[in-house]
Image (tube, rainbow, N blue to C red; front, side, top):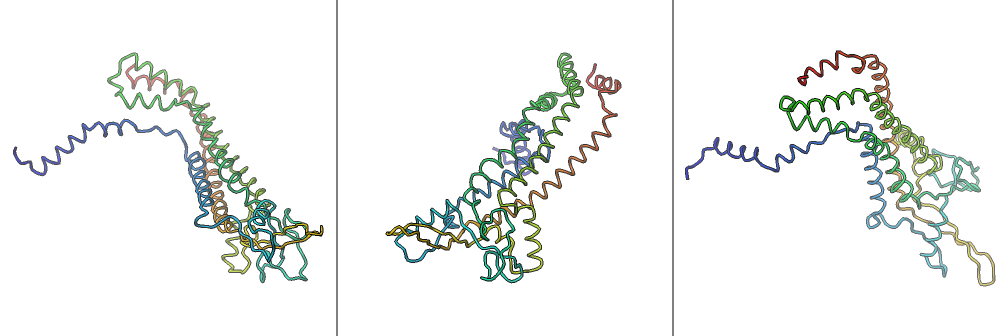
Length: 336
């Protein structure tokens, strides 16, 4: 067998690659994208961020148990107190001083300021952490963010893919007369239905904006009306380098829990315990990331919708369906 030169060897491998069935499969499987950038940002990126946060919250091996409580000498098992505090919730003291005290710490003679709806007798109650797995991440947010894309895919019905697939498979000159009529008919229908197609497209993007505003409102309610200015307060605190961290007010690492029980003689006894909410260190990072992402997503969505509206208002008078010359030109191109 004769030795092959380097150019001949390269040519041979190129020929093998061109006739490779695997290569042809990848070439023929080029996907027709019908989703806009807005739909992808809402349905893919947002859902990925939320699911990523849920994944970190389930890593108890690295971040510890959700709640761990320290109690004094008592015959009550610590596990029982921890379960009680997890179910009933924890609390911390309010403080109106932002320059000298940490949130949740106050002087005995300090006047109590009630700045949250979850405040009872000068104490801030925390319940959200036991719902973080279900409400915020796993179900509602992901489904609602993906819903506009799902509705768009149903309403689009693969019309664009059908037209593009025919034009990709065959050259227009090699088609039979019947196939040319068929393509012309499909394109004419697409041009006629273009306004409805664009209206459905725009409606789904508007739905993305409405859903985003709804998610911001629900998250704010979920965190006791503390989410709207979460990122702003964090940035201001980091810039001014103050002691009081606004994230500690919403996501305290240490909180108090009071366990009540009856003694042997029927007297009501109170057992105070200090609880460590270890997952709040992760919760604050997740919600801070969501805050910045929601702001970026809101700006991008509004800008794109303004562009869509401007484009629609300018091009409505220049629609191809209102010009017979456009249809005649199209017919001439396909040989009719």
